[in-house]
Amino acid sequence: MDTQVTGKWTGRNRRDGEKGQSLVEFAMVVPIFLILVFAIVDFGMGFHAWITVTNAAREGARIGAVGADSATIEARVVDIASSLVEDDLNVTIVNAQGAPGESVSVDVQYDYDLITPLANVLGIFGGGMGSPITFSSEAEMRIE
Image (cartoon, rainbow, N blue to C red):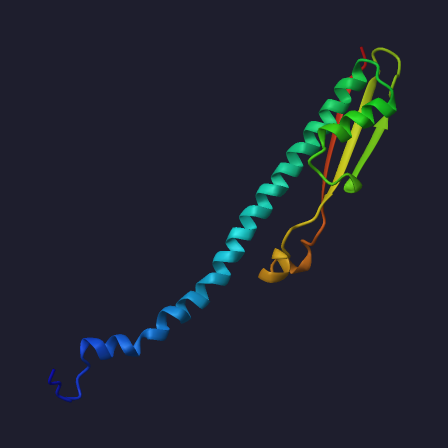
């Protein structure tokens, strides 16, 4: 094969000069992509925790409305919220086994830890959004 050196880029030489371009583009895009993926996962897990806390408070108030004592209500709340870390779950019960017509109130608080330090990585919210995030729900029902 006879090649002449003319000062023009041939097809093969052009590709040789751009070998590192895709690696540089990949290195620039991957951190943004990973932050986006972890943000989606964190949001989904946080949303699950919030829904679970809300449901646990409602179930605790419902069982308290039919005359359950504080220990039974708390056991029901912990059972409903079994997918969450139990050490981070706080249950407050007011007026368990009260008189009919009064209300029983169940307050559930859960400290959710982010799986990634997204606020620190992104440098947003002025450091105001940190881990843990507290989800709280209160349910009140009239005692039958």
